Image (cartoon, rainbow, N blue to C red):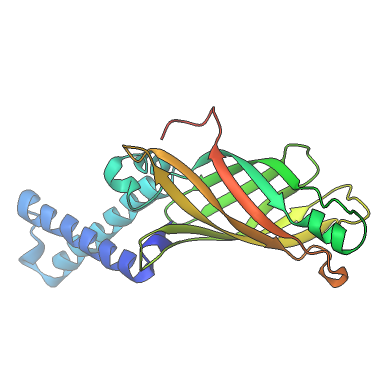
Length: 224
């Protein structure tokens, strides 16, 4: 999630945070930091260590998604941790029609469950279709904020595995998606995601697919 700000801004903010810890210790705890260069370095280095400890505890543990529910923090880090219901609408029916396999080109819709684990320094996603036909896990995830309208996007590359594929399918394929994180409601607590995805599924045979994907919080997910 740190990509929302960018690495440079995060490092800058971390530096200010550690300097704040240093000042608090000097002003309120009389650490004797000016007695010698060694004492000054000891106080500075221990302040940096304290800063790292606080970041790890608040950013890399289950505390982080809880903090993301706070009004001020959620405006910077959207609360995406938890279970989601996903709906994928594919162009596979159109591909079948173009190949003369189906004249009606029916809508190809897949329902799935997605688990998102969100921390300050990483985001992981796992998907399983409701039919248990296939499962996916991400190999790369990033979160970005648009410089123009401040909207937040979730971008990811995933690997899909299908234990028993249909003749027109493959046992494994890669895919990618970009979805926009949308907040709504009077208090901004309603969150969902929508965007597009594409795959390299049997691309040599012209069967690689694309479509739209929508995420909604499952009923048993914690209220954000």
